[in-house]
Length: 95
Length: 477
Image 1 (cartoon, one colour):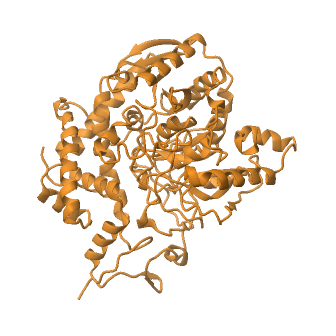
Image 2 (tube, helix red, strand yellow; image 1 turned 180 degrees about the horizontal axis):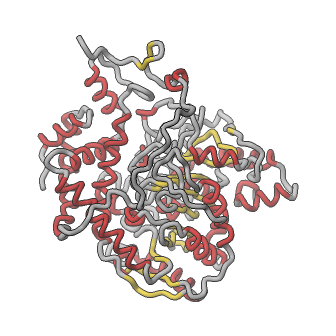
Image 3 (cartoon, chains in turn blue, yellow; image 1 turned 135 degrees about the horizontal axis):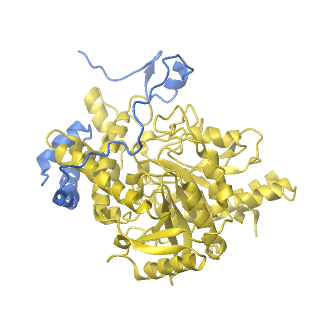
């Protein structure tokens, strides 16, 4: 399966990464090569194989619904690039 | 021998018998860091003027011995950046579970953190935002990666021992390139709480050490169930040092024929064959086995690992921590932050991972990869029905030169061809030094075992090590 520049541009937008034109050019070629290599998987007959979504036989790990000690707001905000009181601050979302 | 050259268990013996003081050990270690760090660059953010400090644990059997920690494991109050600009100046407000366990055993945490490929994306430590680490055996070569800083620090005696993380070989391959011991534990054996996630179905934390005994001691300390990591397994942890010093008569070793193929360095092949002969001379029985889906491991990995990475790294958006680009618009702020904060390989993997998960491609790539992953796991299950372990090279080549593969991502990915299957199958594996090439570069022997049978790895690796001299040879720096 081939990947073109337009697809890479769309996916980069979904991944919220801005690409310079030169970066887009280079990345499209590299991803094309990598996907070409990955395509060797298509020769395998996997119709009857179950996907290994988890490698260990454990499922539905639940904990008791009890409050426990967690970070204080002050500690959680220590690394924030921008904050306002007890909140993370971001550029305006709603006009 | 200088104190900084000794293993942790040798230092612990000396401390116990009061033949050295804790201060003398620290002095030797810090002096060594001052001397060789400008050449090796094993540590991130190292400045010659700054004296390293220690984050002390409680009084415990480790007597304050410092541990070197990879830059992707959270250490409370100590800068942890995954060697990425996007996590600039991040000081974790909590310790990872492995750090808590180390401190509870009396270890102290070195304030200097080990260099790595950004977010563990790489096999050479060239993708660090701080620049590459150099291989202590040949400064023009890479130390391997992504835990290249941890491995180089241990090999150059700038560290007593270290922790790394292994998603596709990131502990074992640098251990092999630097001539030290590296263990990737079974998936679920060690808690990942506080490990900054790369690919959550593959990541494991493990020890990088000067010998097998140190690896056994460190592995026991960091292993065990943790309610903070829902993938950690509630199974008791044996004392791995009980596996040391046992004979290996009758141990059944499988040699996978798919690992001895074209593209493998001729010297590496010879050295591995000699190592297998050594194991046989110690009483192990070997037979050729087949892991027929080996050739599909790298493509499966670059779908599964990048898909998971694209999801895990969505959290780096300039809001809660790290770097933020200036913008008045939220979406634009995200895009610019991630464009400026992530390095080239991180962007490549996030975009590839987003692509294989995106509408219209999910079944063709991601779902298909998960199915082939089942086939790879089944290959191992079949072999382990009749064998106690599998022995193979850790890497197809010795350390390559800095810059040699940097321009070709696919060539770089292929350098993990012998380590990736282990992560996909969730099994444990260890790399131990087993020889040197004529140009003086170390080669590592990889031993793999059934899930939760780290004891078999330690038993075999220790028997091999104690009957060879490779681990005693030190690089000249």
